[in-house]
Length: 502
Ligand SMILES: Cc1cc2nc3c(=O)[nH]c(=O)nc-3n(C[C@H](O)[C@H](O)[C@H](O)COP(=O)(O)OP(=O)(O)OC[C@H]3O[C@@H](n4cnc5c(N)ncnc54)[C@H](O)[C@@H]3O)c2cc1C
Image (cartoon, rainbow, N blue to C red):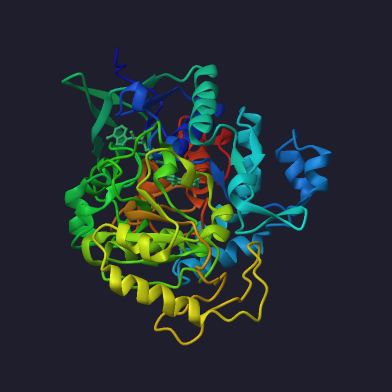
């Protein structure tokens, strides 16, 4: 049954939406969650993630509070370092070329730690992300890349924990229910129109929170906004994020903002399906290229694979792969670098070739100029400066010199067989362009005025990410702004004297 009326409608059932629903429910408001996907495919991109979350912590005591299961032996064998606010600000600034909206960034950074503790209190368990963000070197793990924490069970675990929490407080989730329009007039937003099993319904509400993701699954919009060839990218996550929320909001005058021609896109198995596969999750990604080299169809390198730890380059290198002839590349590793390959390289069914010699390997690289590929590898090997020690945990400065594109860290000659190569294409994760909100998650119109009753959180929000992205920030931003949006949306229902600021 579709109810005709409630206090707060939340559009979407990913991380941002579920955090918004929990937060709105805390105010005492009646809350309803609408999910376009059927239940087996619900949870948006959030469910496809590894659950990695970038948050502020000032040392191991903060991590103990967040992860009460952290054992003394884990603490003894690990250098967790710290991730203070200053580092989070610095990452957001550097990665976005200092275009990230400063007010939204401040909310994201300063509320990240508290929001994580709030999620923990709601039943989300967190763990240190050993497998992907720390290497054991000389007997100790050391975390790098500003990303230390993951949700237990990854994205599926995170969504399951949030759904459990939402259900426990009596908030219904209506699956197979697609919001199509906002009901709005001179007094702002007063509900939504939805499609459910071929029928149209109207649900009146005091507030609506849009948390319907980006438009990455809409091939037409990708081409329209990101540019030529983007229709050829594979979608890493859900097929349901087609920009409905953007369209509904703009239809009533919301202001588009941020990097509409930009997106998060990574290397992704060349033969992956058109949309994400929940069984495979994020294992089609291939993020260990800093320990090898990448060749295009012409047998040439096209980026500095070692420019930084993957967390700071992977989200922009998908675009570089899309720019190559045929929109693909091969990642190549020799025997000594294979021990640094992330777990996704061991997932069955990946597009991989193996050979004992480089001569044999280049002959197996489908659609590649093998002669030129071999020349490129030999030239790369000859250009490696051997004067610095290789260290996977830091930017070791071990580099090539004199190539058209040098590799500036972790450069080692590819000279120990057996060799392995993995074919990747561009996988789009989410789009950066979105709707303008205030730091209180209120949607703003094209004149700069707040649209009464309309809030937004998660990928649909514009203005945070430009050009690139520090890994783990998508979930953190969804949680922080989801929590803010839910609180604001719920408080509108309360008498004025009971509302809290911001
Ligand atoms: C493979 C992969 C791995 C990733 N790994 C990480 C990671 O480890 N850490 C990290 O921080 N980020 C990661 N990301 C990015 C992260 O998924 C997103 O930034 C984050 O999940 C966005 O959350 P959201 O709630 O805004 O959107 P989503 O989780 O995508 O939720 C959007 C929801 O809206 C619903 N919806 C859409 N249209 C409608 C409509 N008209 N009516 C009703 N419902 C609608 C969708 O069905 C979905 O439930 C990854 C993404 C992918 C694809």
